[in-house]
Amino acid sequence: MERSAYEIAAFLGVLEAGCFYVPLDEQMPRERLDRIVRTVNPRFILTDQRNLTAAEGLCPAAEHLIYSRAAAFPGPDRLREESAEDALAYVVFTSGSTGEPKGVSIRESALLDYAATLPVALGFDESLIFGIQSPLYFDAWLKELLGVVVKGATAYLLPRELFVNPVSLIEYINERKINALCWVSSAFSLVSRLRTFYAVVPEHLKLMCFGSEVFPVKQLTAWQKACPDARIFQLYGATECTGMSFYHPVVGPQSPDRPVPVGKPFPGTKLYLLDDEGRLADEGEIVIGGPCVMAGYYKDPVRTAAALIPDPADPEGGQLCYRTGDIGRLDENGDLIFIGRRDQQIKHMGHRVELGEIEAAALSLKGVHEAVCMYVADRQRIDLFYTGPAQPWDLVVGLKVKLPGYMTPNRTEQRSELPHLPNGKIDRRAIEQKEYGK
Image (cartoon, rainbow, N blue to C red; front, side, top):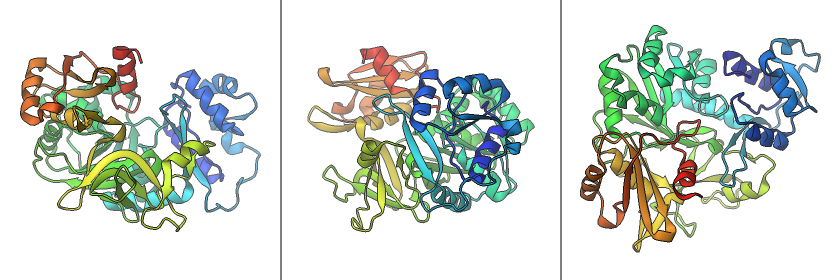
């Protein structure tokens, strides 16, 4: 279906029917759609009139229901009378390292727990008017939906094309009195780094939540100055754990040399940090437990077994926890600090190096908008690519002040733009293919 309020209503209708939904966006590449449909082998496909022919071509064996007529579908009132304990609510497909999408299966019980904890922790109420940025085939937009259905709030689906012109985006937000934004960090950064606030500022913003990526402090500061009355939260979580699992209220000026904590877990969520040997540690891989954890990857027991482990505090208890692949540590206040991806941790010149730490240092420098580090293992070389007006020599000098010598990039190159995934994150695989032919 097209990205619209009808698509959200369709999701809710599927749940009411006792089924689970798998979101397919009309703008997904056909090859990806084919792979997902082959894996799921759906009984029903809900679509709109505009996409009916395409939907029929995807899976001829399924029954195709046009959304506008679905209410009159002559099937049973509820296909599953009582929700079993392990009944699924949805399956969303994320990118896999092999190129094969992974279907993250989330239980109804996990979604209900999320609905009970997140709106309370972030102070949602009926006065909020959300502007939804995320595509509906990810899980990120669920935060806003929960505010709508649990607290009686309001939401607008922000048109994609507005993000090409941030001034028009903020004007749209102001015209509709949108006062709550839960976006990925890169979307917030895009608005502020293009000096949008010299022309227009959000007039009604009461709540701002960001996550998924590091938010450069200089861009966060720009939003704080433009919206001094807004409550601001840093969020952290994983699709495999029903979205966000940690939150941290951001209050006052933030130091550019200190990462903003991702905070403490939502009630009922467990946090463990494990070293390379699987032992509890002060710094290590972030492992999340509790009712939020996925049921597994859909029809993929091998990757499920690699991602889910017994609860480190109670290995015999039968509860599973999710290995995020992220590295973190606790600060002096007991807040979780996100350091970087485990697969971005390298061994260079005899030292363990977090590429994310180099990227964060680069982003703290004047004139740097985006930054990404790559490690060329066969040449023992760290490459840094960035966008912004700063000259490469400025970064070389600035990073030597902030980082030890073994962490300074061996190659620093300016780019007019960096490729991005649909969720706004930098597309590292595309950079690898372009720069190194991998």
